[in-house]
Length: 170
Image (cartoon, rainbow, N blue to C red; front, side):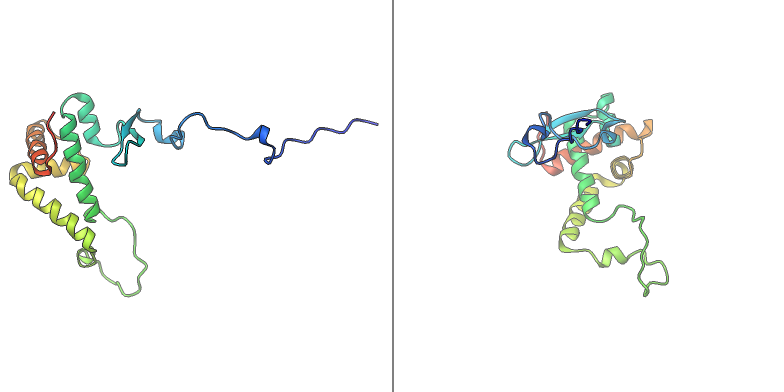
């Protein structure tokens, strides 16, 4: 009589449990177009992986055009922009009551948190002024590579934002 084949190990068997020795960086597809760096988060000493080229400002820092404090000021500015709901809305609405396009609907429906972020962003734009705000908004909020003419305005604008947000200069 032939011998009985061995059954595969079951998941309840302790010998075959997988133990992770490396940190979880998420799916490998996230890192295929960029490197990664570990940074301290705002939570007590927790390290988190961040893609090195996830934003156009990161590329400008890697090129040496912008400094690390300028990057931090740009990210705070973009965070207020996103929290205020100013980013382009690309999803449709299935509401039966909307027949036309209401471009100011999000402005009327802002929560207190979104309104506070909008006021911070608007005050920062006012601090930048008319000349510098165009370059900063185009690059930081809309992810456009600055033209050589706007590169200096971007640097000056981010230096103003460093002072505006009270960030340390290095």
